[in-house]
Length: 201
Ligand SMILES: Cc1cc2nc3c(=O)[nH]c(=O)nc-3n(C[C@H](O)[C@H](O)[C@H](O)COP(=O)(O)O)c2cc1C
Image 1 (spheres, helix red, strand yellow):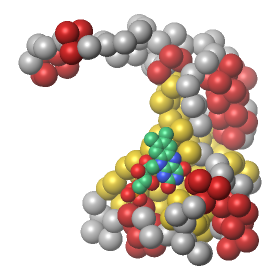
Image 2 (tube, helix red, strand yellow):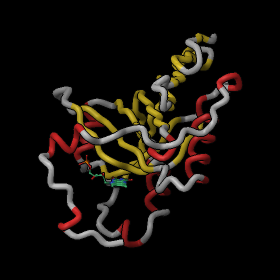
Image 3 (cartoon, rainbow, N blue to C red):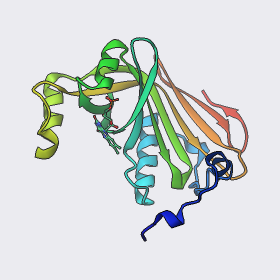
Image 4 (cartoon, rainbow, N blue to C red):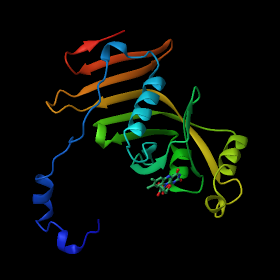
């Protein structure tokens, strides 16, 4: 279907904004009595559920960083991999985010899967992968994607999560949040909202 300017809603912008609805997706069932101890497995399940439901590019994510003055910045990226070392993304050292990560090695990620009314956010310190890992990530890119990258400029970084929040919206506005905080022994899990407010060890 093509759209022309004739299709545009020309109401004043703030009127248009006021008339918008949000959280119009359809939340999947979420068994809160069977939450895993490890947030990575919950994220993997949510990502695969989003993918199976046809959410476009569910591995794209907003990455937030701060500059040396503490001013935040954000942009869209691709999540490269997750393992016990952290959540990996890649870019150039010469980019704004590269400079910001050099000055303040911490970041946050935010996923929003609209059709499922689900969001995941992650925050933590950032570590640079080894030069070999960064080179391997670059080598896996297409020739076109490698073409303009200067030697040694491509970097794989990992967010080591201190906190991961899973949020699922509800039509009755009883939104559910499950928060995993990293502790010495693993993860502390907190459930907020949903059918009843609860706290689990
Ligand atoms: C869907 C999508 C995926 C992207 N993936 C990446 C990526 O993996 N790495 C990257 O450096 N930029 C990626 N970009 C471009 C970034 O959003 C951004 O424009 C660029 O990295 C410069 O950001 P900076 O000026 O904050 O450093 C992507 C953009 C979009 C819309």
